[in-house]
Image 1 (cartoon, rainbow, N blue to C red):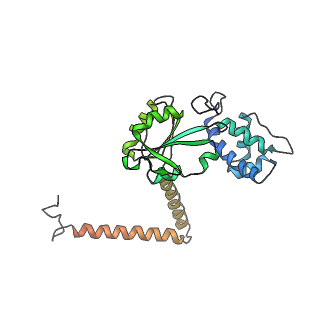
Image 2: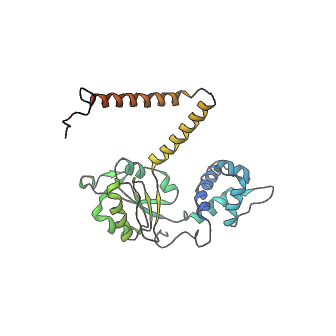
Image 3: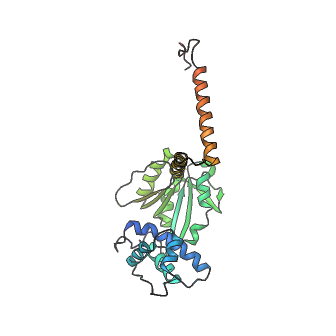
Length: 267
């Protein structure tokens, strides 16, 4: 079977825009669900709704693949699944190493979606000697001393970093030096990589902060319109107020008898 080190996806050489590439997995997920229900064909409107995009954008994206559907019939589901899978490189075997087998790394190792999408977890790596040999998702964890040898022996070109932030850059540099050219980074830090190395960052805390921003904005709009603020938002504002009051009390408690900062501060 072909491996990721000798076969690279042809998306860039064929001039497919990055924005289109980013939407292809959405189309594939929707099409796979249709295929599992034995749906033979789908219209651009139906598929666009399932993927969360507009139909004009979908048709434009598919034109880059050379797929235009049939008027009055739509798109052949099975053919599109194959076509998008091939374009994304998912018809090949992509060995992956996961570095950092804490709670997140272990969860990733146990994720069943890798194998069904063409990704094989070739190795689990951790710096803790006590982890060496322990099975996670049926795969024995190996020490980071073995990292370079594993990458060479398994033909790995995709690495997943799930380490603490302080270790991520060093791990990244070792992966790149050993021949890894694509990295999925879960560590809460920005990685510096040379040209020719692709990095995708996944930061759950940032995504939650963005959602919090939208929730706050919606609550503000409702309040400005004189609408009753949802109970959840009210509870959050109440909790924030309590935290502010507590902080104020602590500040007062830290002051001297006349309200000044004590002359002697704890070290």
